[in-house]
Amino acid sequence: MNKFIKSIISFLTPILSCLFIFFIIITVISQVLVRESKQYQFDKNIEFLFLGDSHIAHAVIDSLIPNSLNLSKISEPYYYTYHKLKFITRKSRIKKILLGYSYHNFSSYYDEFINGNLSTVMPHKLFFCLDFSEQLRILNWNRKKLLLVLKNIFLSSYHQFFNLEKEKNDYWFYDGYYNTFVDAKVDSINIQDRIIFQFYKEEKVGSFANLNIVYLNKIIDLCQEKNIEIDFIITPLHPLYVKIIPNIFKSKLNEFIVKKNMNLIDLEDLNLSDSCYVPDGDHVTIKGAEITTRVLIRKLY
Image (cartoon, rainbow, N blue to C red; front, side, top):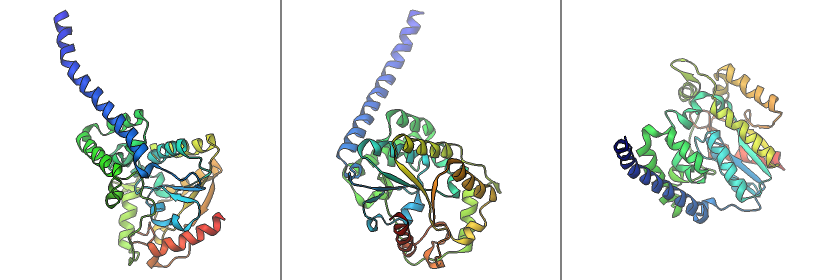
């Protein structure tokens, strides 16, 4: 029996030692990055902080809004937004959060970005601002794709440390205002494809997001705990896109607002031409972003 126990210990010792060293390395890298990389340094005078996914990244030109900062990230689920906000509130006193909010945020396809088929898209970009326990959770979620995720994490640490802006959208902590659509126009086929991707599964209307909704509630709770004012923003959506969204998601979005008694800045029906939308009808072009931001300024001040 003693021989068996010794064999087990001999087998496990190098494995556990390697894991211990690995976790030490991860912890040190995270601490160095958030201390040294300029992307984790925030202006103490920021009044409006914009958070969310590509809707905010495409539509809100923070350079035109005094004392504002857009820290959105394309494809960012509320799980990452919540932990990003936790991190930011440790470093800065934020007065007001403006959070991207739309129908697709309630669809189960967004849970895929947290712990599903698309779970490798986000971890390396926001990994270093997470608490250690959340870092371990992400690694566990991606245990079947661990080598790819670890490779991207270490690549991201390099790009973030040296602030390589050329690769910002692939490896950085945030995208901010990011829009490359100059000459674009909405397209009905692209809209239909987008709706199917976001709201349907195997040709049937999909279910609601479980985790994404949980972390949306956590964001609200965190803001209340920190005495931070929070508004939701629905950015412009093309009428055809809105028309073919399944009704259960329309109802869910409205019910949540009423239930939580949230303040909503609703720009969904902003009067924009087709040239102000990208082909999927779900995002605005640069021209659309300029109009959206001007309207938003009037609502904020």
